[in-house]
Amino acid sequence: MKIFYKALMSKFNALIAGANNEFYTAIGGRLFQEEAPEGTIYPYAVFKHINNNQIDTFKNKMDNIIIQFSIFSEKSSSTEIHDAMTHLKALFDDCRLSISNGSLIYFYRLNDGLQREKNEIVTESGIQRIWHFHCDYNVVFERS
Image (tube, rainbow, N blue to C red):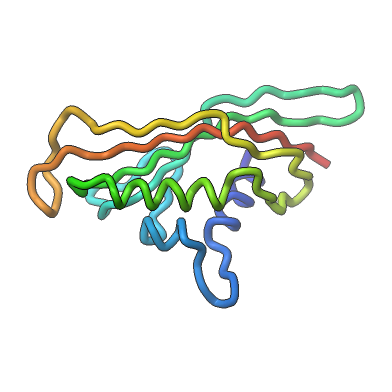
């Protein structure tokens, strides 16, 4: 899994003609594994490993992974989170990854959803309800 996470973060951090991708820019470069550090500025995103099933085709070893991205925004309007989710999908829907010691077979979106969290939290902007967008991807890669 370490090689997959490294490839995922390389795609997120890659510069194209000296500039970051729009998803990176929309969340200020704040993408974390599992959870954001306490006090992280909004908006930010996290990704987590939901499950992994090995596929054994007798000669090839493949991993079938479900990975979930979550984006969080404190803005009262949903514009910021809609922009970030659009850029997430543009970056990762059917994307290509360079995986050392492996080959990506596919990376496709399974489902997604947007919700407004019920509980209020204290942010730098005051007491807020947080927008939460979640998006699950199915990823299959073959290990060399």
